[in-house]
Length: 428
Image (tube, rainbow, N blue to C red; front, side, top):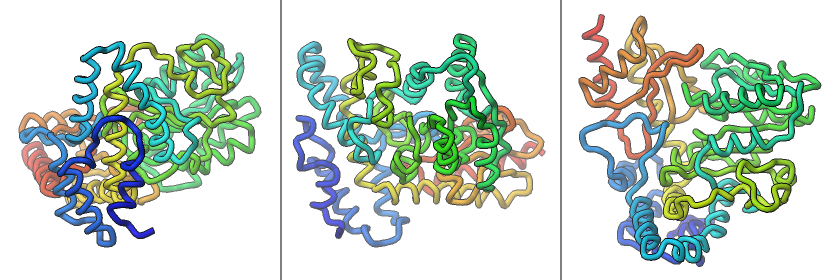
């Protein structure tokens, strides 16, 4: 289908009756953006005019260079404006406007999320973050003493802690994978997990992109072997949803949790949980409704009072994402990572701890300065140059994590590379 302004607006739900309030694409800014998308539809992705528009859509600090977007991403101005608008409406009469008006947008929002995820709306629960989604599955699965769960030492701490608590409470057995990263060896990565499978294995916990160094795991390949053995596949997708161009069913997983306030740039405290439809009845919710054994995905949304403005503004974040396009976005994020990695690699003192292959990495990367502690480097970058990164010291991964987002450009990364060079020259 030829990419035209009308087709793109249809894709983003502009012509549908979704949420009864104005969106980005009814504004002059949105109209200009659609013109740019149409202009560059069939041209290379590194068009400076387009990315300048994206940059101007964010309200980030003019003094601090934020290269830690992996923790939580800023929201573009249209998403901030939507949140403010929904919050103001809510405050006109909270009980009425939140429960009677804004909540009407939940099902259209669920549909938009499902379209982005490539699954049925009846497999998507709207929650607050990846941890909540992962905990829902970790504590909702029916496991008995002696059942085994395969997971990695490089998984996210909150996830590890939840499994350890489940182990202590229910006497299940945790079987640990200790990944040697970075790796571009598909067989090694798959075998690291599948070699741990036994007749007692009930669940394999997979982090789609390791948050410490940006390593992408071959989830689909591991899941194929897991399914042969009747093992549940639980995926932590905190760093891949709206970062990589994929659909959740592509992974062949049973459960997938993500934070929408990361790469989708939705409001803080918004998340999503996918559960394969036929498994919904098997999972007990953390916050039960009147029918915990229901086959309805909505049973996982009995959270009590939550931020309706934040949830409703997710739709605006999806619109912004769709305007850019998943493929264009992934390509740009990878190009930004490759740019700083290639420039830092020129220094003999630098070690790059992230794979360079497109199959195994994208926008998140990590580097180390030989014989220097990560916190020394990160502190220097911020104190001397006001460049915000994060020091990583976790298991066998030690370095400085760098996560640019779409509003970052090559000039920013030149500033970063220059600052690292300054650290090297002044700390020999």
